[in-house]
Length: 163
Image 1 (tube, rainbow, N blue to C red):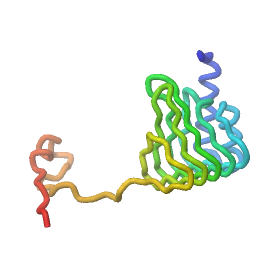
Image 2 (cartoon, one colour; image 1 turned 135 degrees about the vertical axis):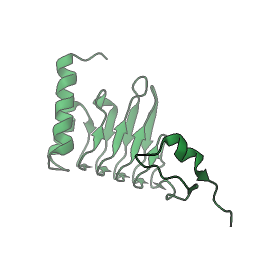
Image 3 (cartoon, one colour; image 1 turned 60 degrees about the horizontal axis):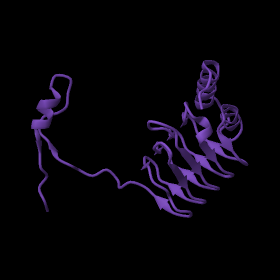
């Protein structure tokens, strides 16, 4: 659906106010509703949360849903999809939810997405999902500093000893 320049601009202005304004369970959800985000019941939207700018109507937050600080819900990749965050589901801080054109990504009722996770497939109800913690990948022998090139850094990486 083609939106007017005025509507698209208004969506972005409301989104900016919502990202940085107060009221995680009051003002922010209200502003996102004005943009077209489907919100049912009481939800919490943390600071600096990015909820789809181009297609806000493709995001649904059900009663009790929580989206923590600096998370991103992106409902378009070469066309719009849908993201549904189910009843009482929790999206942890710095998480990214993304869906491709024509698809629906569902975070089930009561599910929890742990902090700093990337989610692009459905999460069943009452399930905890998340990424593994950071782990050592290689030994750095050439620091990635301002006076070294990226190529020098890459050449300086050495495999870790297997123990």
